[in-house]
Length: 616
Image (cartoon, rainbow, N blue to C red; front, side, top):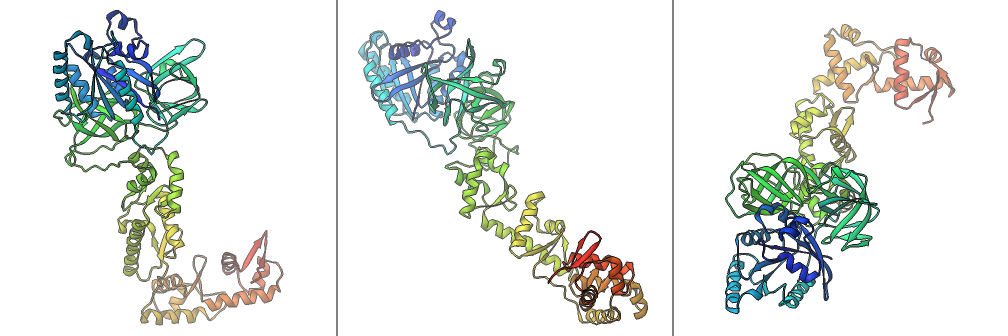
């Protein structure tokens, strides 16, 4: 895999001259740079190493006025070439650049002591000792220190060998998210070709002819061609300085600070969480500058009492970031170094200083999903998982399917659980329903929202419906529209209610179909109408009585007699309502509700204006 070399160091310490000596390429491209002999913006070149082959180099400005440009070029370098002039030694920007490199995920540092030909040996040795002392305060202690001269060529073979060894030993940090993205550091028009954007590919690989998007704003573009080291190629990968010829967007809409990527490979956001190492004392609510990718944006810093290494920043403008992307935080004014680290949650949630924070170190996407779901009692949505692990919904589909096959997750219309957690929460829901049954022994079922509120869950919409369906499939509940009951629940009447029901049933059983209404039964028994209505409804809920239509009640034996009479009277032939009325010797107020009931239970089937008894 390719890696990226970047220079660093104080102004006029020979960075660009050294690149020219190593590569034969002048990285200073601006007329003002050539006139002043000072790098102002990013410069680019490539070097051919003996065994590692061709490697990209970024040359950054050393003057403190151009620190923003320096950061834009440094964010994604893998090997740093720190240039320190032998005659001046360590200077303020040397210190600043070394601190920045120490905070970024630079894998190897090589120090080139430039202008070695203009000092004597004793002075050179003294400077090297000072450099070693400075390096000892960083993670680069023991880094190679090589005296060189761009004028005489002294030390260049040793430097080339050291670079070659560093590139060969380079091991990129594994990134489970392989969708490519590239921070844009330049955008310009080329006559006859159109818009070209350049940058260093930060992740994955980009191919000619593929679709891409530019963020923020989400401009959809097509990759027309790819150039790496002035050669046209079909693909460019992480660590390569790359020029992309694109179509589909105006040059006025693209600038440094934006990101081009595979669709949805980065996140557009106004606020992010960073895991940082502080080099200066931060203050809650202070204004900061955040360098991430090629962007440099103002924001407000919010600290966290639970974890001092967490920096939440709300930006003044929308930017595009990726999880794990390096970042540098500086004070707004003066723009001194404050901290460095990585993006841990691209789209962070607003919170108070005392609130705890949860973030996920993404080892691989499957484990990231499991960590995001965790043991959340109300489940975790797909959108929240994407927010926590910094990938798009499109990327998660195959991973969810695999985890479902492995029975590591269970999903309900975009709401996800670990199976043991769902089982525990489902049992709490069933417990709430069981309690409601105990409090209302004569009610067969209850509104699902009432049970939900009792259980304390926040399920809603399609996920809630899918959860209920799952519980019904498991034979835990039965669903009747928006009402539910435990599958095993049966209404149990006390002896007094049983005796009263038997008296009511006796009145119903006196006639086959023209049953008495509740008011008539109440009058006959000398009891209130409400008492009869309550026992009939209770018995119907308990499947002891059959409710037909809105006001008619029958015993099971009566229903069976009606079926038998109808079957014998029609002799298996289709029949109309008037014909059924004649067979059953009844009126329409009893007939129509009964026929509709028989349709609903599958005893009869209506075809136009006739019905037929189904074979049973």
